[in-house]
Length: 639
Image (tube, rainbow, N blue to C red; front, side, top):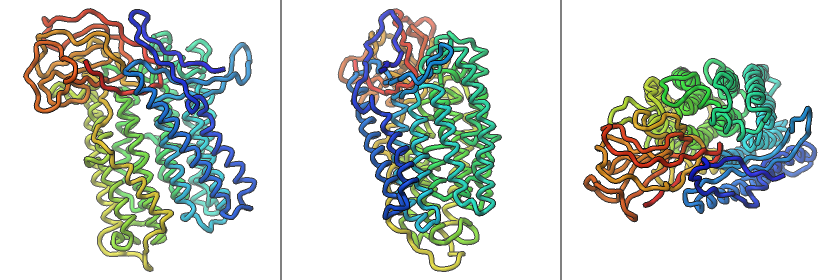
């Protein structure tokens, strides 16, 4: 049964809703099915094949990447063709079984968030597969390794496309099982098997929270597992705040364990005992980002349950802020290059969780996207170094490698600069949006957040400085000075260096346009309940009101749209005109010159307002949208 996603605007003055259709969007289940099939093919027939089954895994993941790109293209073309109208997520749902009057369904949910993760997972997995053909060549369990690498990819793709919470649990556990197998790949060595067991058992602690949270939401939402329905009911106030808070805290426990947040972060550095390609896949595109994805997908529950809008602190933001500082601090005292990167991953995951906690949903997903590529490049780069010097110890066995390994050095340096947040690399733009989303100190009109998360801003800024410092230390100890190891290091082969250059290239954005900020400061809007969530931008039914315009530090807001007054030459989410800033107008902008950038969110405000002065006129009320969870779009609108 094909079911369109539930998500409509308010009845009065509802905007046009675009119903998405397309072969790739409707048959997206094929993407995880292909690597899942390759798992069985490699497991049963891999040892009989010329390359031990690795060719099957590469072809399967490559086919999934092609289909993912087609899905991304179809989604983007639909959103661009909507001209600012609402775009529904594409939901395909089939009844699995019926028990006690409850339909247990299986299906797919495709929206902007899903297609972004489809590309990240398939692209990085393909590069890791190619890299692994050289890195684990000659391994006694070569075929076994590629079989579970394919299953790992399929499990994460299944989790990303889950239409309901039962499917999310299945994908969540499959990812955990695959990580256990791959971390303990060399199980003959006790530290490796201990690390696998530690990762498995630590994550089981958080899984209790996941099961309890899903169960509470099932009964609170009236007996449904549908992600869209749960989020819609949470935002519409149909679920009590106490139940939402309990559910959010239980789900947060699962996030803390899976995404290595303080205080259940200890398994993540020990997981470096596994092969380096596994470390890259875990830390960049699969297991650890599953927790962040869970929050983003169930954001209606977290946003309402933890009262993120208009606040200054909550459990999600606090855990993320502490984690980002703890991870960055511990990275300083590591001599093992992979453990430096492991603690760096903990810190950056804390950044993402903190961003979601302060209401900067778009910035969190943007950072997840950029971090996946430069962190995969760093891990695979560390593997290239260890491949040459047969060690991971930066102090004892490395140094001066930039002369011997120029390709590895250049790609590692580019990825390190992106991680440190230097412009114009991708890490700068995503981190900048997270810091802006905290709301700042309110100077110069604020930075456009959902609250006044000053403590989170301070933590984020300190972490940014620490990140630059420990990556400088890492690069210096590895590639500068004299070589302190034994033997003669050499550059890795093309199967290793080509994926490194592709990943390094993804850290350099084609344009410096970043994601929209979370929205205006709470003092500047008519309602503080405006999460910058997953959603839709559309044309305003009315132009901005006639003058007098507010001063240069005042905001105008219509529903989910925010503009800076035209005296500011550029501001994300603000009025902008090419060339020098014009004088303050006394009438609404005319077509052709001015541009408004949408900051999409759920919003219950319905009137124009300004921060000062109170005597300025207001326009007539206009309807605000009720946005379906999961659809992403950012568009510009001209009057």
